[in-house]
Amino acid sequence: MSKEQLLFCPLGGSGEIGMNMNLYAYGKEDNQKWIVVDMGVTFADDSIPGIDLIFPDPGFILDKKDDLLGIVLTHAHEDHIGAVAHIWPSLKCKMYATPFTAELIQEKFKEKKIDILPYLKIVPLNSKIKLGPFEIDFVTLTHSILEPNGLSISTPLGTILHTGDWKIDPNPLIGGTIDEKKLKEIGEKGVESMICDSTNIFNPGRAGSESDVRDSLLKIMEIKTQRILVTSFASNVARMESIFYCAKKTGRSICLVGRSMNRIYKAAKKCGYLKGLLEPLEPRNAKKIAKNKILYLATGSQGEPMGAMNRIVNGIHPEVFFRVR
Image (cartoon, rainbow, N blue to C red):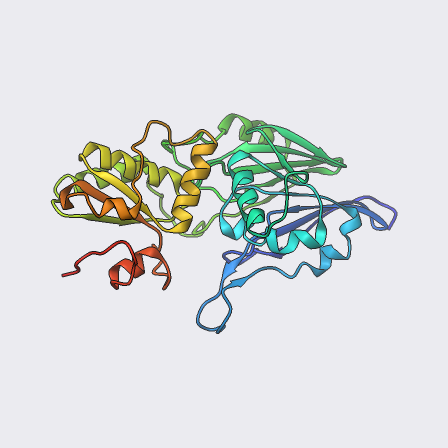
């Protein structure tokens, strides 16, 4: 009872896709300090009518908020940051994120009309922060979004490696490559436990590189003579850049369709990514471009009913119309 302890307490995300919210504590039982790693949502399906988003029950950490040192965010996917604007107002603690993630967090709080800047601390890539007994080293990884970070969480009782999401890509096209050197150094010093998060990790095989996807996309687009409509996760900025690249190579203008696609594009540009690309057209201006000279990049790649792709295909989008044969 009098000994110091290092605790891991997942409120969501362990053994399931989405809704990631992980707690770590250090100290004696009557004097423990806590940190939260990620605060995400999961998307409801037809089994829960009338519900769109589900996020973890924060009651446990709300009871301990006086001992909460901060929220650390690994990357900007919705299953890792989507609940922040919903839960944070009850916690009102510091948040720590790398620049791209921080930019998207700011946008979420602007929608809530909350000035988050006094609480949001921007962490440079591959740097360290210290929160009480926790020394947290951000480790650059690769994934389908900009600035994915693993966290090496060091305490007097040992080190935990919290990986966040990752997909090893030797040629990610945009953003840094995986920091193998730092990972090896962490391993050599010793890790007590690794909290590992990666979709499909239990499926054998390899995920392809974004560079391979770009090559395939260009081969397909080079032989097309009508309008081209591509759908993708808006958060996959490398894929977005590949679509811009293919548009330029095939002599086409590009139009972004969907709120989140435009939001991610602007956030990436603001953080210094997506340099030297074509300037995207507004949908109303894209109508004036010849069919063989325009390419649309739309949200809705999972068939969401209100996603831009679904509305275009069903002929109900207000500004983009395709004749589907």
